[in-house]
Amino acid sequence: MRKTAIAVVLATTALLSIWTAQASACRGAHHQPGRLSVDEARRAVTCLINHRRSHRGLKRVHGSFALGAAAQTHSDTMAANNFFAHDGDDGTPVDRARAAGYVAGARAWGVGEDLEWGTGKRASPRAIVDGWMRSPMHRAVMLSRRFRQIGVGVTHGSPLSPDAQNSAMYTALFGFRKG
Image 1 (spheres, rainbow, N blue to C red):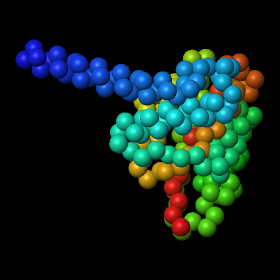
Image 2 (image 1 turned 60 degrees about the vertical axis):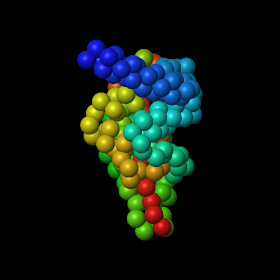
Image 3 (image 1 turned 90 degrees about the horizontal axis):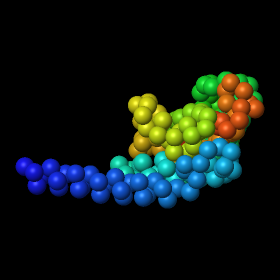
Image 4 (image 1 turned 60 degrees about the horizontal axis):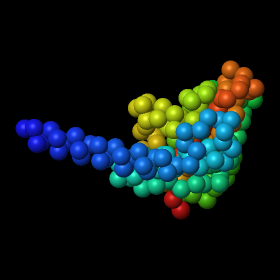
């Protein structure tokens, strides 16, 4: 019994160290908004999401210019207009994907969106992705097998004030398209 318990502890420790090493490979993942450029934050979020997906045997998501433009527009709109919601003056996630040209020419397509914002340490890419993982609905979108592409939007500010210091708003727009 004791040998089995020790083996389980060692196996768990080994798995956690592998996962931690992989996640720490995402440059800037722990940095607060003021220490990262928007592009660095986008790359860190995508990297962290792909680590979560690969840890569960899922394929990586790849960047989409159109989804990225739609996601960035939404993060910017939320910060500028002091709101935090999937639907806004810029439409719904589907409206934004269409406007960015993501669905043009596709015979089948779909999108899903995760939103989050935070201040200080809770605004780091790692904290944002961890928050999505704790939410069953956000986790389901992030880990959906059907989504193969992603666009990430990051804007400094908060829905409370666009000038909020050390805060950031994140939009991850996932998608798939065929044909």
